[in-house]
Image 1 (cartoon, rainbow, N blue to C red):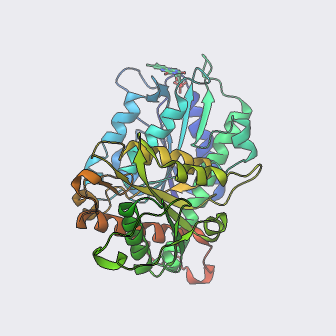
Image 2 (image 1 turned 90 degrees about the vertical axis):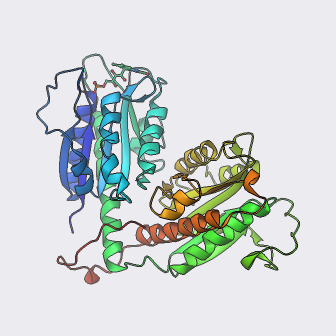
Length: 406
Ligand SMILES: Cc1cc2nc3c(=O)[nH]c(=O)nc-3n(C[C@H](O)[C@H](O)[C@H](O)COP(=O)(O)O)c2cc1C
């Protein structure tokens, strides 16, 4: 089946259009059906011949290249307005599981381009989209400064774009199409997404996080995944007596190693939030995975996080978004919960990862546990989809591919 890729850009001087065109070429070269589309701009007359992007194009596409210029360290407002116009489709859960990669340009080398790419992803995490950066340590990514979030280039006054930048954009489009096709093939061959290997890692010192981890693991097992539940090194939380559910009397998990990451098809990481950041033990472990050269054990694997905070607004969102940055550096494909299940709304509506504020109780609420279980199911499904190429014999051209909300 041919993957459908929409390349959506906003451009006034031509930089973003040139990058978008190159990305579209890369996707076509893979064999994707491509729509190259501009967004409406009420402050400038468009010189470009491409049709205007509509929310329905997001529905049509399985993979998306979002090409927004950096304006004040963010995607430009016309681009943002376009993303916001998808809200009726988002509300019906119709945009989940699009695979998205971001492109941007800015005048200054450090003029806010990383923020733009991350902001693009932050918006589409609400859909439940998967964020795909460049191939880790690929020649194109390194030539562009080694940005792990997406492609960012320096724009010239006349909108001219260099060969290396165009090659990197081509490569981004090609990779997006290839990844989208892989997910489609796996979805058609193995609808349940089962038999994925999932590693769930949690910090040792927090009982609440441990319970969320246990629930994530249970969710993954519901889909037939093989699960390794692991804790980070450090003093383990004392066992609270009379804990409800499966935690009571459960043996302490083994300490996580790099092998547990290499073994997994997809991963979840949970920790307590301190001073607005996830526990140092988790960040230290993730940083220890970074190889001297070449891709590390997280490369190409779906991953996201969950957290426990002292109070509802003590970093539940920002710490999880910051975790995603670290995951991108490892080459992971960020697969957040998004608003893909009523359980997410019921637990406070955090689309970036399950979170529980300790002020609501020392132990996670039933709603938080249900959201963690959903996140576990979702990461297992994503791991199964990105893990392997299924036997092509199992795929026939008339097998319908359902766009599901997981
Ligand atoms: C309103 C506005 C805000 C901008 N803000 C930034 C910025 O924060 N950092 C930066 O380096 N460049 C900034 N720029 C420059 C744009 O990033 C640059 O012109 C754009 O990437 C060119 O894309 P285009 O050729 O596709 O129009 C800004 C430009 C405009 C018009």
